[in-house]
Length: 142
Image (cartoon, rainbow, N blue to C red; front, side, top):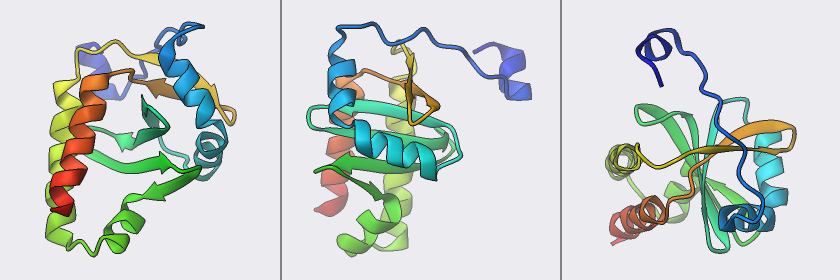
């Protein structure tokens, strides 16, 4: 992203996710919940595919964003995750900060575009980011 894009909020056009890419197969498995999310959320979406699940950054990571987790055929938002696990606002805040840091750690990872539910999404096929996000969630729960 160029300097002017950062100032003026320019949108980066990423190349399409290549056919035959493992991330595409992982996302196809999550197609219905991704389409559901695309219809509900009008914000920018960045998807981190994983095996049998996906993490989605909503908004403008790494600073102003939310997170959704697609697993078991459903979408769990941050609010539901916090309620389900009885997390305090402080714990949720710390988790968001760490997730933003994880996003920044993957800043050099190639990004692609894919369309779900009529919405263009950025795809970040990064096993490192996926593992870091899992670790952050696990550490928050313990």
